[in-house]
Length: 264
Image 1 (tube, rainbow, N blue to C red):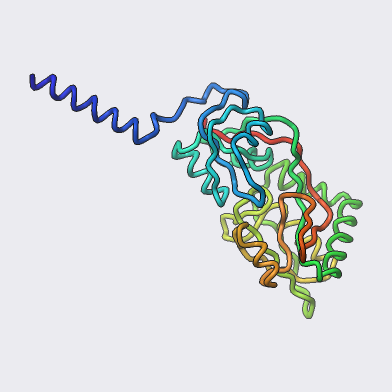
Image 2 (image 1 turned 180 degrees about the vertical axis):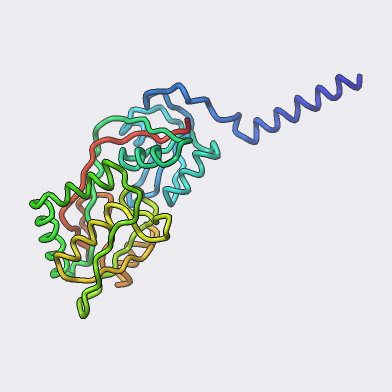
């Protein structure tokens, strides 16, 4: 009788544990295609509404629900804690995370809905907008824009981006970075803003002749920081943008491929 009672109690404890954990995480280690994934997907909050149906249509997946996270790091923590089956990301973010974290892997998805990056500034900053676009054109023509892309995105350089020398008496431009969006902008091991966007803005500043100060601001606060003149520019991962009082620079980066970041 005593043995039977202990067995029943152990079974109840196991049932409660599985219930609390949502039945345990599915083993996806053998999956090689995005269309094999089900369950719950993590996604980063943005300016537009995100639904699980929209994600499934975009990526060809079969997820049943979506959890939105304000930062990329929070989505990664949810993945590692088995609160989501996968995190939907663009190819650059997925490949960066998989290359710098041995517990993760990236599965490439469909080539559609391109990731486009531009910068946003206030519409009354016409001179600044012109300076940035002119510098972007010069960097593109010289091949330096592609060289920065190869260094920080294609080859995944994790070293801190070299910042331009301070120009005495020059205008100071305050740039908002999320610090949470590798390989485009993130905080390096030394605690400094780094990544493709940061290196690019440094190159633009040298051409345009202004100084740059980087400040870390959550994406959800960037529009308010821009319109209140706390910052002058921020990187926008949505390409072209139109809103009262805000204008976008030319698009300087585009990638057509998305995918899933998953645990090994």
